[in-house]
Amino acid sequence: MGTVLHTLRTERGAGGGSVVLLGAVALTAAMNYGLGLALAWLLPTDAFGAVGVLLNLLLLATSVLAAGFPWALARDTARGEEAGSVRVALVGNVVLGTVLGGAFAAVQLTSGAVLPGVGPVPTLLAAATIVVLAVVAVLIGALQGARRFDAVGAARVSEIVVKVVAALGAVGLAGYGIGGVAAALLAAAVASALVAYLAAADRLPRGSRQPRRPRPGTLAAAVPMAVSTTCFGLLGTLDVLALGAAGVPLAVVGVYQAAAVLARAPFFVGSALSDAAFPFIAGAPTAAAAHRALLGALRWVPLVLVPCQLVLVVVPGPVLDVVLPDSYAPAAGPVRILSLGTTGLLLADMLLKALFARGAAAAVARRVPVAVLAQVAALVVLVPTSGAAGAAWAFAVGTWTTVALLGVLYVRLLRPTWSTPVPTRWAAAVAVLVALLLVATTLPTAPALAVVAAGLVAYAVLAVPLLLARSCSPATEVTS
Image (cartoon, rainbow, N blue to C red):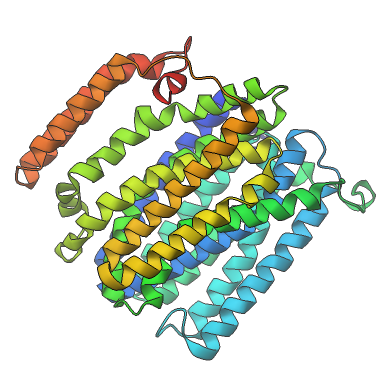
């Protein structure tokens, strides 16, 4: 037990933290992929649509609960100023989680409008999950600020392991449907909370060691962070929720959810990178040093994540043929559009966290809601006429509007310099990949997958020197 606690409480630098979090993300993304695909096979399309709505509701709740207090606590902890912030963060977030869970349960139990046909047991399980997630969010915030990235990774891995095992057992073996999924989500949240508590227990003041008042500014910082991150969470969930609210059949929502599972996976990798960079951006002595810390995470977007997105933009059909049943073939169109929007989402996430770290939460809070309004307007116009494709385009409108708004703010506040042109090697690698992907669009599934694999291998060979380079920053080069 002592060895486990020592590992969980290890503090790492940005490089080591990124490696740990990326490893955790790689595992959790693969398992989430597998779970989503397995549920698509095990459940009827309309039931999978209901599960998709539930997952998006919990994702939105998680975004709200991780919005204000946890990020304010992470910033205070990174600066060594967490005394007094822990209690207010825990109490505030639990109260917020209880309100959210209670509101969801009340609406669902009285009208059934949120999840049509879903009974009281899954509803109450989901409401309880929201309250537990409120605690998890605060503990994760404390661990991130303390640079205990091993513990953050362990909490996330334990959550997905329990979720996968419990969901597959409940649905695949016991046949419990959405009720089994809801129970699995609660069990996963509890497991994550236990791991995070063990890792953070020594940093949680108790009794007389806990100051009665939070550090001045903690509440003031938490409010704009809550507004910003809540709105940011809406960017990634409004499309699915809007389809349900517009009366689109759950079978169509299920197809769209499957497309979202595939297209949005790279976002979680990018989010892990920005999480690892956050305390170092916050603790940087100058704006230039903070910019360099962000570039350390940002460099992986064009080098690793964009090539993966290109596969889904150019040739999604063969991938869908392999990983999903034939009934999900219509997901190819939304996957293309959602992949474009996902690239915007992960860039917006990095900018948002960097600006949070530099104390610009109030300025961010005035801009992200504008992007949400742009997405809502696009949903109102496009969903009635274009259905799932319209929802996907609205998602892209919201995410890239956020990038534009936060990018302008970032440049104004940090005044970064971009001096090196796009490297020829990277441009050549992308050109080779795109050319082979275009060839794959003309082939049947099996040979198309072989050509896609060859394109990714060729890209990797050409890009390896950039991936391994340490003396110069590829992020600086590629994003100029």
